[in-house]
Length: 316
Ligand code: A2P
Image (cartoon, rainbow, N blue to C red):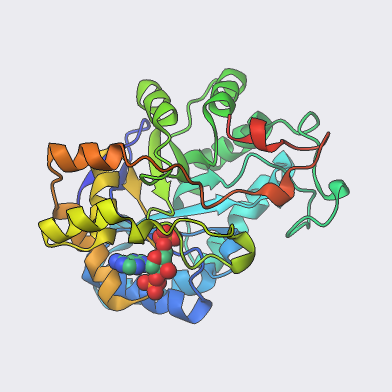
């Protein structure tokens, strides 16, 4: 399994199993099968509401001798309702308890947005902490303390733009190990990739296949299905691979780790095999210049004037 080295010396496997949208029962089977096949990286989060089943898959894989705990890289994410520094350890321990683990390899701040405690999903402006009253660096500093407690090995963020990373680093004095964001040829985020390379921040690509199984409420009308793109399909046919495999090979080729979600055993195996493929210069260039810009995941419903960000300053 190919790895990337993080700025704290820890290693992250290039290909991991995503678990967002995996139904609880399916998540358990998928994680166990992935570890049996050779995956060594599992991406989880408090908000996915399936960490107990993800943990069960990890434990059974360990019990059946497919893998040892120290050889599996497990990511989890602090939910937006645990941003108050006094709640950060509690949020982390809820994930640890659900996963049944005594440490998490990588702990990410899930979004640069803070909800009031107990807010699962906000219903009104009062459910948010105004940005001015709870800076992201305060939450991040509290997350860093979890390392000293032995609860997490590496600390990073998710859904952070260049400007937000810059501000976080300036205020906390610490460079996050990872930023996990939506990355694929329709949303290549070249400026962010360059910034992260320059600052030693590893990028993990979420929704690398275009997340076609997102809830309908999260979809735009007539959105372009990534896996059906003609150029990607043409490259796949000539390589004797699937479009998904081409997308995953492209992600790893850029130096990003990637976490395709699947609960289907054949596709779990297919995705793992993609890491062995080396893209040609011509194919890389075609994928880099695909000519369509589209972001599949955006928290529009959280953009409240005067309280949180707006569309134009969220992805800045
Ligand atoms: P399934 O879980 O049934 O395999 P993303 O990782 O971008 O969120 O995409 C996840 C979606 O892509 C799911 O609908 C998943 O379905 C599907 N998927 C995962 N692997 C493949 C593959 N190799 N080929 C086609 N679709 C895939």
